[in-house]
Image 1 (cartoon, rainbow, N blue to C red):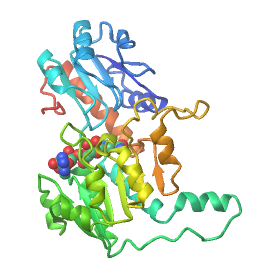
Image 2 (image 1 turned 60 degrees about the vertical axis):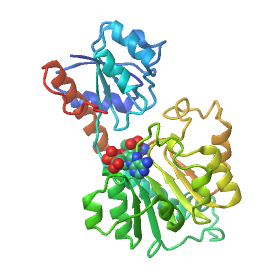
Image 3 (image 1 turned 120 degrees about the vertical axis):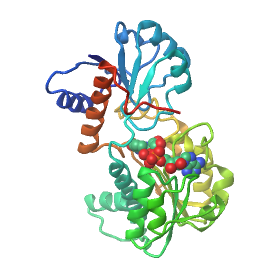
Image 4 (image 1 turned 180 degrees about the vertical axis):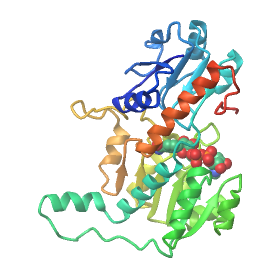
Length: 330
Ligand code: NAI
């Protein structure tokens, strides 16, 4: 079956071609993101595949439906970029890849925490220039400190468990209690308690209307002065302006981001010869205690293989009129 894969990078082509090594499906790779201007690449196709920053609002969905598209495959877990209700009303199916590798994201989250705490990027930069001084590189023991995990689903639970292994006390907030976390002595508490007691706070909940700017000026003011804040989930969970104010006042001591609320026209591209056209991002990058990675937490060999295989499995199910194992039911 034909699949039009938008926003395709060389690494997507590699993993999808490997997963399709028997030539079961016809894969058409489009380098551009999906938009009204590029929707014509989906002419006469029934199935398309998109990534995290391809925005599918009701207008674009209707346009694609009229062209004949019936299956939308998200090659990611989060689906905040697609108007699921509009797709359902049109009778379109939307699938995603819910758990291609929670380990990849959890491990990257730990990487951000450790790198920020021990100033590893700065230390590496110094050593490469022949500067072996330790001034300004002092970190803190994570052992016996408190971590707050907001969202204890697949990824948050792994992060909680790893931090416990480092000897941290772990607090959590989630409307759904994860039994495995309780068994590991993760303490579910009220948001206020998590904010006021945690030395490190890490976000692992989805972005949706209710969670927009979940972390804002009011919540930052309730955190411990000098707190470390980590977001590897979705940029819109954090009010960037409030985070900048928190960094300026010292309320936020360290900020680690793999996602950014206006990443759509920036991330996944090489803009090194054009510069960054985003004032807030430039402000963030000027702080020495801010570490930003370009939405790469998912990006491991295993995750890319799982994403491609699960997406093509959904395509086969759809082709054979079978129930879709990874259909998004909101
Ligand atoms: P999951 O669905 O297993 O867990 C999410 C948890 O968040 C659920 O237990 C839910 O009850 C909880 N939650 C929802 N709203 C909440 C709130 N306001 N406060 C506290 N908890 C809340 O999701 P999973 O697989 O753990 O992924 C989490 C997020 O990570 C995804 O939504 C996605 O946005 C992000 N992600 C980022 C990647 C990256 O490369 N940076 C890759 C994959 C996922």
